[in-house]
Image 1 (spheres, rainbow, N blue to C red):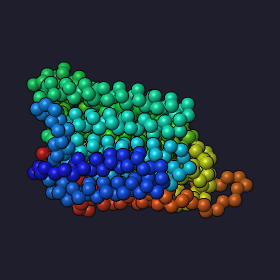
Image 2: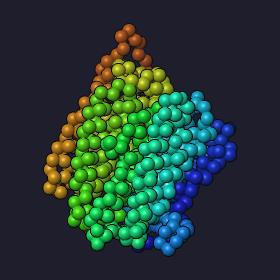
Image 3: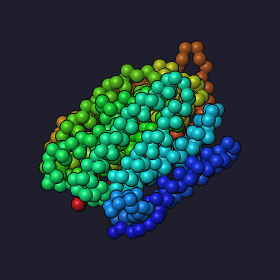
Image 4: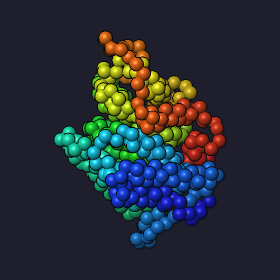
Length: 491
């Protein structure tokens, strides 16, 4: 049941208004922090008010303006969009608290928090986009607004990373725009309100080119190899920005876009008939393994995290490519599972850097004695990525494996096993260094990060456990994922 409601548009507009207030009044730290936290909390409240209806099958729709018949700015909160919207809105609250503490000694804080809010506004706009044009406009807004955050340090390295980021992501945006135009030409609509709007009558060649165009466009931000090059370079940005890139906004926007292409533009039945996702599944599997191998040899803490993100994002793409209900379930829930696990790790990396100045893995000997709660949170996230039961990552790997068996492609279940072993190979040595080694001649004492850095870290780590233990609990994220899968597969 569809209901006209302003809340799908109101949610991204709250962040947009916050950015305006920060730019106008943000020179005073009190008001900058007040508007940032107030807007984050208010937007989360607005999104949560739509959750009960979404779980019952209600879809909230708001059409802002129509440029030509069938083409305009419109918002829609179906189950898939709500899932992404809730994750990004919730993590914005935690990241804002973290950023207030982390960025205190930094320069240009007005610019930082203003564009920070604009990025989250664009992300929620992507989640609630009713059609490809609306999605594209917010997708490109996200690219432009993230650039000042990537180059925040204004060093030559940061400026180079910013240029690389723009080249990659703007090129990807051009492919999304091309795909949007081709979609309208082939079927006369660009809506995302149906489980597939294209048909085989459009012609196999045209459909193949369209699929490649849209996957390439969204695949840049989703960091599919070989389109991932911008992501490790962007690690020169401040840690809250890295967390935003890897868990809340940019990379998730790309992965979410691919889910929309697979389930709402093409639809499962058409893709099965054309076998278009076979190559995408193999590319995702390659990315999962190759990026994990590269991560093994990264001594810089944030670069190891970056290559882990490249690997983990392709779980979402692989799950979608399987075209099975279990695979779709894994793809959707991993949006949250990866987000909370990875943002925990980035919060830990930032806290260690702020407290000790250490940025490399080999420097972390004994850090678990100095910052036990911080490294305890890291251990929780590491166990999740390895796929230990009772942690969020296990749920993703379990349903991906079931999806692989359901599709008759059992070898993708082996990819999950290899991925788990590789994750253990580059996360557990950090845990070992932190808790079982001590730097020579050093006197270690507990000296945790300030509460503004520690509290968000611990809360996100707690969510990693919650997401791994509440699969059957009503009204939890898994329920939304199940509702989205039922819509896509007509169950």
